[in-house]
Length: 466
Ligand SMILES: [Zn+2]
Image (cartoon, rainbow, N blue to C red; front, side, top):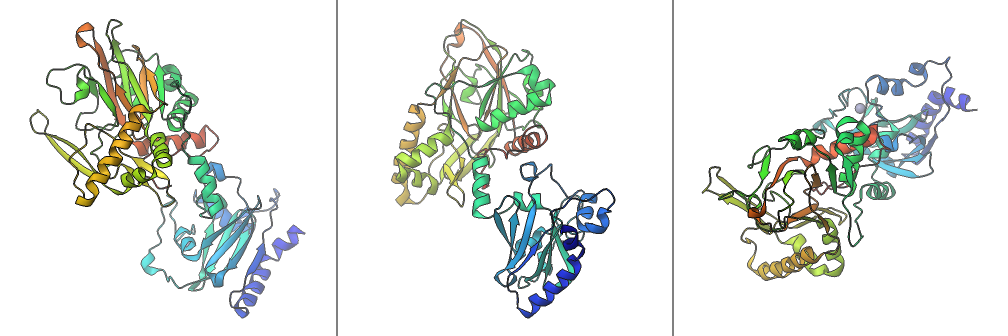
C-alpha cells in the first residue's frame, strides 16, 4: 500500500495543487510514506532531495543528536499559506511560518554545503505564501511558495525539530537546558582525575559535563609545574588573555595590581565584570600551599541560585536589579599596566520568557551609580538585599585547596571568594587562566553529541537567550 502511495506521489501532488488552487489555500494534508528503501532501489530516484542533502553534508543528524530520531508523519498548509504544520512520528505537532521556512531553506541555491544560509531577504517577497507542502519519504519536508513555482524548499526533520518554536518544543528544550541547583546545605565539590581529563575523550566529557551542569569541578593530581594550568585549559579551548595576561599568579605581592594578589580576604565575586564578555571558565591551579599557612580557604556560591531565590523572596528588589543599570569599573593609571574600563548594565538579565540568562556581581569592581536620580535609593536598597543574600547563602561550597588541585568553575555562574591568610606563616601560590564561555559551551555540545547522549548544554549565564 505504501509503495502505491509513493509511486502515485507526483500525480497526487498535482491533483492537490489543482485542488488547492480552486480552494484558495484550504488546509491540505499529505500523508508521508514511512517505508525504508530496499537495496534494489536507487535513493536518487525515489528521494532526490534527501540524497542531495546527504551529498552536500546537510543532513546533520549527529549535530542535532537529540533530535535525530525525528521523522515527519505528515504536513499540512494552514492559515491561507502562512504556516505549515508538521505531524511528528511521536504524535506531536509543530508549526513553521512561511518566512521562517524561506530563510531556513536547505536547497542548493539557499544553503551552501558549509551550512551557511545564502538567502538574501532583499529578494524575498514577504507576502508570498506556501502553496504546497509535502514529504519525501519521512526524511524531507518539501515546500513551494507562491512567488516561485520552480523553487522547492527542502528541510531535514532533525533541523526542523531542533529549532521548532512551538510552545511544547520550546518547553522541552528549556527542560534540557535549565540549571539545576545544589540544595545540599554543605555541598561537596565534584572531583575528576587529571589523567582522565588529559588522556581520554570520555574523561574530558565527564569533566565538561560536571562543569556545565554543576558549574564547579576540582581536577585532582595535576603536576605542580608552572603553566600546567594552561595545558589543562587548552583541553577545552585557547586561553583567553585579559589585561592580567594569558596566565596570572595569585600570590602575596608588594603593591599588587589586584587585591587577589595579596593576603587579604576576597569577597564573593566573579572576575572581570567590566568586560562586555567577562571570562568564562576560570582555572586556578594550586602548586604551593604550605601546611603551616593559616587561613586562605576558598569558598564558592552559585549566583544564579541566589538570584532565583531573590526572585521568590524579594520580588521587588529582584525587579529593581533587572531594571536599573549598575556600574562596573576597573581603572588604573598608577601601575605599569594602565587600563580604564567602565561598563554599565543591570546585575540580572532576563530573556523574553523571564528566564535569568545573566548575572553580574563583583563588590570590588562596582563603580559609582550613574542612573536616573529617582532610581538611586531603590537601587541601593535592592543591592543591599542581594549582597546580604550572597553573603549568608546557605548552599556555599568550601574547600582548602591542596597542592596538585586545580579548581575549575564557570565564572559567569559561580562566585568565588577566599578567606584572609597570613602570608608570613608560609607560601600560597596559585596560577590561573580563563577560556571564553562560548567556546566552552560549544565544546560541551560537541562532546555531548559525539561521546554523550546529545543532551543540550545547560545554560551557562552568557546572556544567550535560548
Ligand atoms: Zn531554497
